[in-house]
Amino acid sequence: MGDRWHVEVDRSLCIGSAQCTHVAPAAFRLDSAMQSHPVESETDAGEEILEAAEGCPVEAIMITLLGSGETVFPPEE
Image (cartoon, rainbow, N blue to C red; front, top):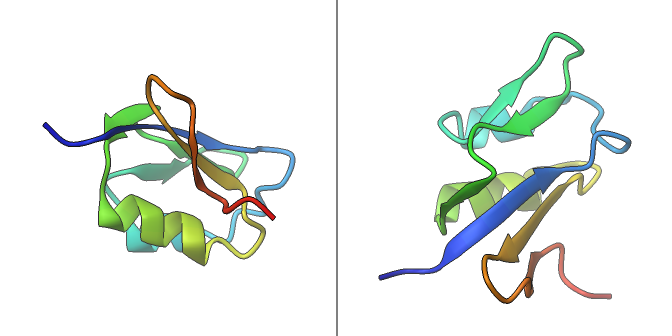
């Protein structure tokens, strides 16, 4: 069984660029305020979700490993 992730969008950072919805349309949606949110906050680890986080112009998407809470993205400085 693969890793499971907790995916979160920091709404104070999100600028509604919609990059994440283009890269991972099954994983992210824009709400009526044009801010992103994950479709599921707990999900199987996936390349699309990581690419969406990496492509976010303001690094508003945080991914951690379920269980341990270890940071997947953004990388530690």
